[in-house]
Image (cartoon, rainbow, N blue to C red):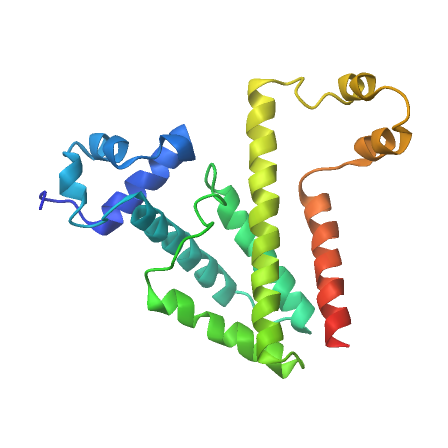
Length: 211
């Protein structure tokens, strides 16, 4: 085992590498180089890239749990679930490709998983069946993950090619017979307003199921 190498140090270095190079450049070999050790030294702590991603997503989710614990419960379940969605998005946005590291991962800390207990309790107390409460949390999480992946990919692509999402070029490319598609494109907004509006649609759907 390489001296001074801990799982915590590996995760911290992995997040730094993610921020600098992105998800595709995050490899065990690149991480070992950053830590100035040989790749086999890391296998004492993480067996492969998937386990590394598990640890990274667990670290991020701990921050989500800590942030939510500092927020008082809202007036109803919608307030609480909306607060969860906003905190989750904010944490993903702290890192380049932050939402991508979450997809398909398995948390390595049971305390992170246990934190879901209070959320299920709030939702079942509001009238959701347990299965519906679990679906609600999964659905909101999936919405946030998908939104942030798209949000970050568009931002990074636009940085490389500022004209990539030019509406004038798109309108010309579409030609005649797509007037509604063109108009919808010009109505598109990004960032907080779009996130909040679409989150509201998700919450409205959950509320309808509850009724």
